[in-house]
Length: 134
Image (cartoon, rainbow, N blue to C red; front, side):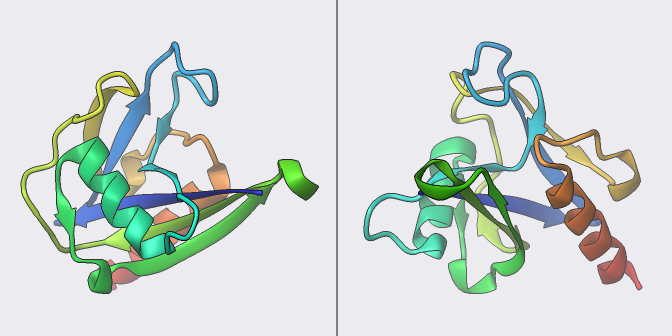
């Protein structure tokens, strides 16, 4: 089983997405949340902190992360488990620190969100962001 964590950095009603490079083997040329694989023995929040630093150059405050959703793709040993988190507190200015993985990063309002690699994550994100505005 493969475990993937992803971060929805949210500020001023907008979320930061990364655009996966067209040459990526898995999910090429689509918008996604920043993130990646958890390493053996690593907690989801530790992986989230590591991945956001590696991909965006920011240091998140793991205790400020709010769980958004879980998603499983595939079955058995080949299955991939995704865990998405909303992050509203971090240090640094987000930048594309992994140009070999992403060819763009951009802030989006909920109503502007493009299709994501995993639509259930998009749905959960839009609902969470709209709920935060109420």
